[in-house]
Image (cartoon, rainbow, N blue to C red; front, top):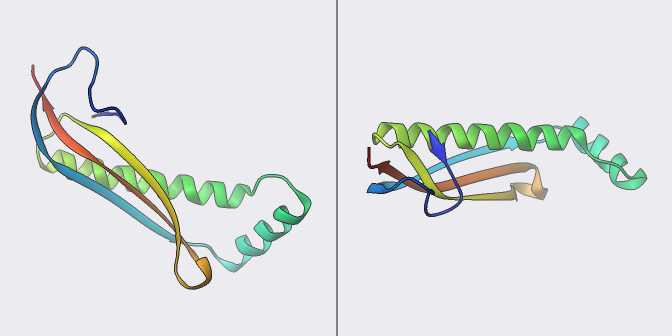
Length: 107
């Protein structure tokens, strides 16, 4: 399935706009990752454990959005927006939300 952050696709004409589709993923950060991340913040460097979890959350969110588009019979999703948030008490969870418009392209 074609996915893009743009509202048009070069060389493809949109035949029908089906609906807005969304995918969301919320992942908790466990205590060990929190401790490791805090140490990284103090001594510098990248927090690989957090980066991996954010990547996992993004993958899940995109899969959900694509599944919703497929259920509508879409060929693609245009105008995709990706949002990242820290939620929960004391920022204990990470959320990725993606949304876009499911479309059918002219054949």
